[in-house]
Image 1 (cartoon, rainbow, N blue to C red):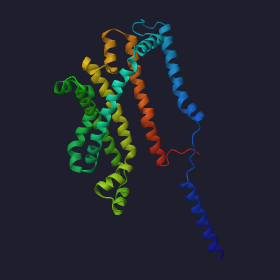
Image 2: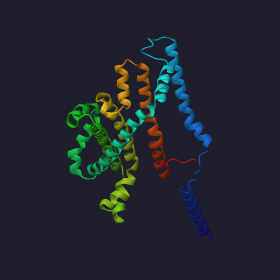
Image 3: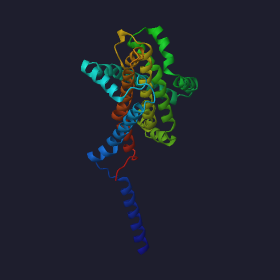
Image 4: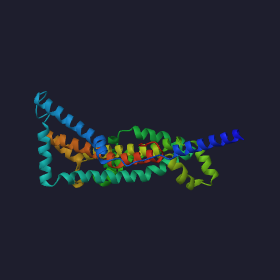
Length: 292
């Protein structure tokens, strides 16, 4: 009788331990901790880069027209702000990039699912997607201009050709990492066909898919910058790529550095505002991002 009671107590203790493992305690991160852990390190890095930049200028490692001081770049930004063109230039490129990226997601997602789930399609298209992903997006600018002319359609075509393969391959990689047991369990519960894809395959492949989306945005942004630099035209409006090319044509090094910094800033901002929260949400939903 005592042995039975002891075994019952052990089972109860085991169940309590498993319940404690499942009950993850998540607390809201204080604002001060976010500022110290997330905001302060990038700001310090920026300050260090600016200081190093200014030291190089002061040491006169090269001529000033080749390496302008940070103050000259700041003055260029202030001039554009006073003229009311700074935000307009940034928004022209950002709006193009985001719209092109959304179109790439709409095309790359079903294409990735098709390649991942149909063996014949994977054998036929898989190697082509991998080859297109490694092809520099700048190579598409010339044919896109000839096919579509100097207009926004050409810009979006270059973005799609650069981003769709990355998004599709990312989803294929995510689907390949889904344990077969998960798919079989879904089929047992009646999740087959499109229902199984939506409720089982896509959620399980979400980490790989998200990595593909992140890489797809990087390809979208780089493809757009290449298109704007090469295919500049007054009819296209002034974007960041055109601003960079104008600086080169006018030998305006402060303008060139400003364009580079703005392109970098947009890339970092999109990652921090969109992809980093999505990554944290995916990790947290899987119990991989836990704060005690």
